Length: 443
Image 1 (spheres, rainbow, N blue to C red):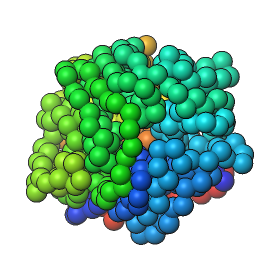
Image 2: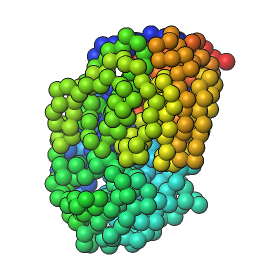
Image 3: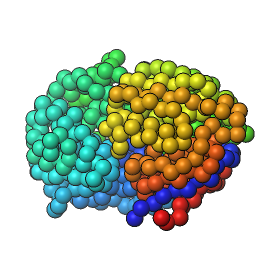
């Protein structure tokens, strides 16, 4: 069923909110809990469609999982070699994380299986995972480098020393998970730092890793069940951070946000633009740093985004493009070609949407140039409203919803059903924070 949002212009964000649990950590808690020995208790689990797809897959692989109920999940681990051949094709829905990471686990099994997904996922590149797994002895068939993936398991994988050609936490994680089944030490070198949730969680499950500069090393072996507390998702929080940063009078606090240093690129970029962001009550949830994030309105300025921050904010750029549209002067993003192969071509789709609003946005091969704030940072609105097509991309739908805070008229965002994949309850929480959002009337 198609879902459209209608967001009325103006307003501000205020109060205290907690967004749902981190999607990346929720996925990994189920995957590692399933192949651990003993039970794993997860709290704060994200009950979005992507993470629920991961639960469904492991149930199909013979793992008993209780919940989720109120964010609580109990995974009865079957051990490293306890997964069973599924009775049918495994459906990842819209979740690229599920497909790429689980392919690493399934590469080391003694059975064959097939992974597929929805139309959007079947367009996403998978050769970047299949090729290094093949070096480990796995045999994975793709459809011209895209899903479905037909995985012929090999319980005698061999360790590799691999330098990744692209910055991808999903590829790195798939190889680390395959490394649990490999003989010898698997070594993975990154061209730039990416999120390290897999490394942190493997250690929480009892596996030792070695980090030497840009290289992480892991030897195969079992995991033991543990307790995982999932912090609030910083990618979901980013929409409210940007909303408060662009709307005069805003003052919002987002609680229990995961501030892993490999995920805080959006905060650093916003601060470089002049945003007033304060981290309070810093603490740790199961090896992951957490803080309450307070954001107050302050005028923003366009910047050239440092390339070193790009992989640390790759999922947050739809929201950051809205910040750039509200900044004085030009914002330039380069080195972000990965945005072309997300749930949509996020560079092209965001540029088209910004142009609808009257924002001059020039898509580049690896980024975008945005000329912000034609009316000045203190004007009543920075751009017009209009009808924007999110192309079924959840992050683009939420980004243009937040944009309405500085629009001159309502923004109608089309094709928003996939917001449920990462942020169930987005509209309700956004309304509580001050956004005038609701369902659009049927055409």
